[in-house]
Length: 308
Image 1 (cartoon, helix red, strand yellow):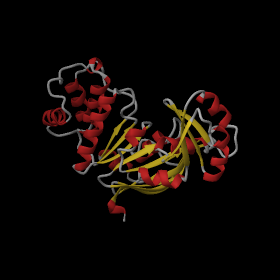
Image 2 (tube, rainbow, N blue to C red):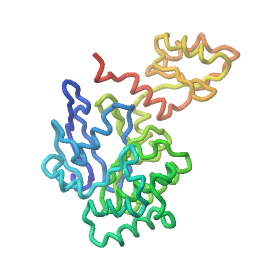
Image 3 (cartoon, helix red, strand yellow):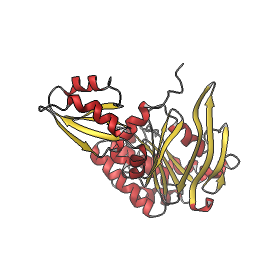
């Protein structure tokens, strides 16, 4: 039922001229869930998020966000949603506290000083509140952005590639904060390109060129792809990959560090394809495909909606 979902939308569509950038997408996100929204650049993820929070009008579709009608009650949705954009969008010549106070003014929050103080404490920014935003590292800018998203106590956070450009430790700390907040009842829809982050989500959806291609838990997405994958190590992997890509039955041959992952949908056809390459100088091992194998496969088999 709708009341169990923070997001429950059907047929969400957006066109720019002759191009459909979001094509009739259905999505349900449970309350208190961390939901990953994945896809290549230009796939329609940001457009979809902007429609959800009322920043962009949908051309078609229906449903609810936080119980409000996605089309008719966008203003009510905005007041209960926090949106963290891809780029740092705060005043770099203002301090952390001044930036948060500005956001609190925009939301007309009562007791602004208390709200700013609580936000600073909540995100571990105490001791830095007087530091200029322009002097912050990527990780601290990220914390400031998250603090600003939370200052009006939203029920849903839409995070658009929130960890782009930050170091691995800052990414890990950020995700620990996300799960801590989810444990307090907040719902998250997070776009990301990082497979380790995708695996931290409760469920996933994969969109490519405006079309929803897969959804479910990480294990379900991998299983539903029905992909067979072999790992190979040894010399001249680049040349082997080049040759394999031209062989029927091989859908992808992708380098993973010092190994090559070779995948296909038909297990028997794939085994026939790789048989001539199974020499004594190479070690072949059938492995469980990972999310990255599956997403490369999905992307390679989807059509660019801006191609002529």
